[in-house]
Image 1 (tube, each protein chain N blue to C red):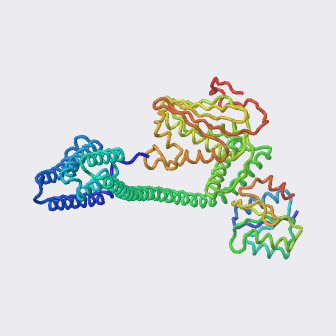
Image 2 (cartoon, each protein chain N blue to C red; image 1 turned 180 degrees about the vertical axis):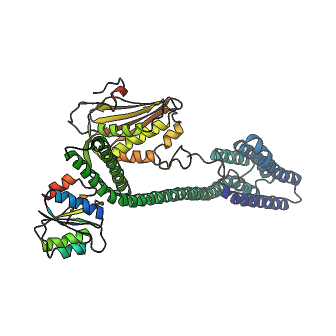
Image 3 (tube, rainbow over the protein chains, first blue to last red; image 1 turned 60 degrees about the vertical axis):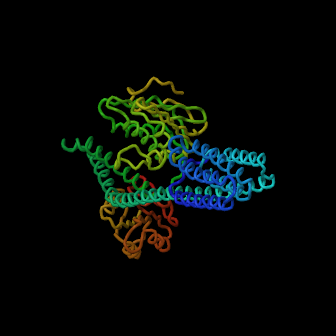
Length: 435
Length: 107
């Protein structure tokens, strides 16, 4: 994994404390070195190196870093410190105090996050040790100081990395908690809507029960009466049958509401997929605007296993989404194809299409491209859940400005008869070959 | 056939009564489980159709009493809530009921 090149904001105070401590320690080392060499030759060189180290590191940390970036500035700092401390070592004859600069410089520079730190550290150690060995330094000192340098650097880097990981983990957990809270709130809202729906459905159901019976009885009575007054004939032949149809529709809606609200468990059954597609298309047609068209290709009569009502909901959802993506002249095509083990239903539109980013998030709960209040972003997440629970798959391909195609693949019941099923409206048939 | 109908919704009770009377059955109606138990002293039904949710005793409890008092009576529980198909030997019919299916079940 690549090391991050920017410190997390909360680690900045720690980095600042480290920098201050490094300044104090460096100054102490320099002062001790000058005191220990007081009155000896080369003292002015030590003063010069002291000044150069302070000014040079400051310039690199403030000016150079802004001009050439973090990585190059660290390179410059490494070269500069090797030169300065090489000179100090040579002037001091590689005394213990001079050697102490090596672990100090190695441990306080190249603190993560910086790129290529081990290359730089190795280069610095090789350069300083080589210089020391050819200018009178002892091999044992070089080995000990190199070991201490690496050890101190590793300890500092490990603690910083640990702190960095803990911070990132806590940020991630906080974000997850926020998402979980939002989901819980949304779930609670849905549950409240469900309870309300169940209550309303039950209240409607009781009167609908005797309204259904009474209107049915009345129609039966009129049909059994031989000589009806002309005014009642229209009731017998048109008005009451229409009323009975209307009542049946209300009863279906109430039934759906109760099922939705109470989440009654239902057993999987075998059913003909084309029937559910046909019903969904019929319902979707009510949302067509003038100029828009919905085409349905002839469908194979293929049986699948599952919950027909849920599958109808899936198709309806895809159709409504497709219609909502259209402009005034847009078209939607529905096709069904039997692929042996699988049956495929595709819903294609030539509407707005989607970006790759939208497609990647499409089936996530609460992802929506609709304005606030126009949708919770649960439609396609529910679709995905239903299709998966039926052992199927759903795929999408899309191009911005050209439209989208959703492909729904479900395992079909083997050996079922394959016969042509008429599309919803014969005039809507597409010239698509189906088996 | 002797039919006992129990429902606290007068509209449903009337619709059911009409359905069975038209077929020539002898019908008694009441709007509570307590009323139904009282009627069992003077009326031995072949079929008891009861609503589930009623004040006081619910339909399932009533049909248990009916099973003990008149073991031969067919018991039908009528409700908008479908939790199970059977309530201790009683047949469950969901509201809104299909009149012809209900008649077939009883006759």
